[in-house]
Image 1: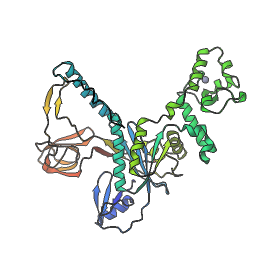
Image 2: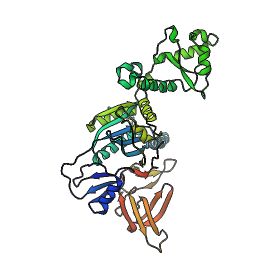
Image 3: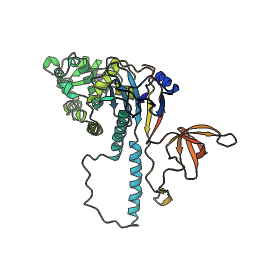
Image 4: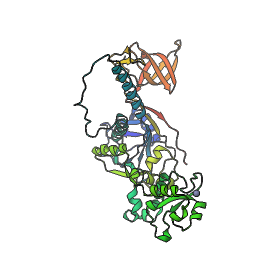
Length: 437
Ligand SMILES: [Zn+2]
């Protein structure tokens, strides 16, 4: 079970509690529900000098989904887990369709606009809107979690491969020197660089071995630039021959391998622009930030025998990861960024012709589109029954409720609705409980 967040009467975060404990507090009237998602209760009495256990907030940023986990570093217990789905693609699509409509309108020469050459500079730190939205999603979630539980540090995955550690293993820690982690990260890196195929025969569905381009016997180094991957037979055939001798009859292949081996390691070191921007924007939270590499995350996850899920990846980010991660029974919260509605005041058809206008008013009969409501409709009515879901509010007072993705109850009167949680730009569902790998 995921833990339940607790705040005191002054809304200061306390230690998350076991759901059983939360149930006792609620049924005995000592606490009340503050928030449905993530489930948070508020105590009715104040707590004098609470003893807080620090939690580490761990992030694995991705382009579609960001894994989030709150981990107790001492016990290795995952306290809260979430998969955050971004809407970068939706934003990109919306901007592209707007661009298309404007472009066609200008081409029709229906309106003259003066050229604007002086106001096209982008502000410092500008990011494309789709990336900006991903970063804002993560930032707002960090901000919210900080208000619900004692977060003392942040860990995030910053780079795919840690090349500095790969090249100088002696620089960093005992685990690295023993070769296990260094070898693992190197192998992952080579698999990526050589596209999981044998460099000599191009087969990809066979076990691959790490192969020295310039053989060790002839003075070849262990650096990544002297390594490639080959299948067993090719490796044996090559033996300790020099690559120029081995590929004497295939000069094109020789040239290609040599070029690819020497290719700078830049693309792997180059930090993904979004992640770097996220790192910069997490600094103002004032918490210590630990950065890890993708290779280290995978190493940690495999070593602890955990499944490949976004939030478990997040729990394994960084060197601070505890020896054992207790994640059994954790129900992740699936958070989907849904935006705060459309800003468009005038909707157009596919030709860009205005066909509908909307009111400036967003709140109708006390509800706003996106609110989570519970509607109890009495018997003789067509929509009779209990419906829980996202509401679409209309000025007429006849609301639609989306109970599940794709299932919608139309025409529920506003007077039958009760709010559960006000819209905050995200929709929430519970994921499947983690049963272990
Ligand atoms: Zn081969």
